[in-house]
Image 1: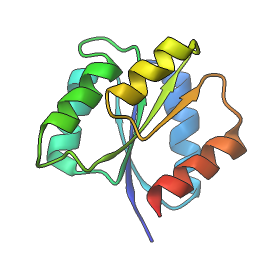
Image 2 (image 1 turned 90 degrees about the vertical axis):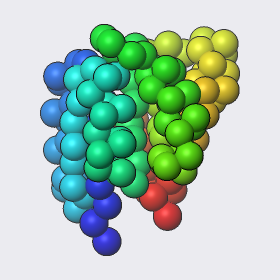
Image 3 (image 1 turned 180 degrees about the vertical axis):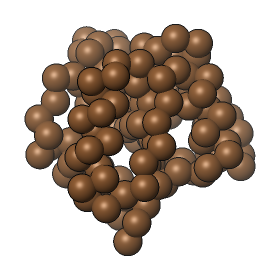
Length: 121
């Protein structure tokens, strides 16, 4: 079953590698390089899952997550935060903002795919 996945990250190498990996899994991929663009795409396209970097230009991933959870029309969107911020306080902030999962960079591809599959079921 094809699902739409939004990858929001300001690092082009991460966008390209995640896009390749998820297309290979059969998903329709949207990308955004900043938080403002990510929020716009979430509202317009209603993706099944958002892979959201915590630190991006415009709105941060934390702010995007909070905005999604505050909007009843998109509040059910599944969000997996990806971040190089690995301190327990950062993880707590991401989950507190409403993320369904929090994965730190660098990540193991197999583990990330498993988390994604779990969130899409």
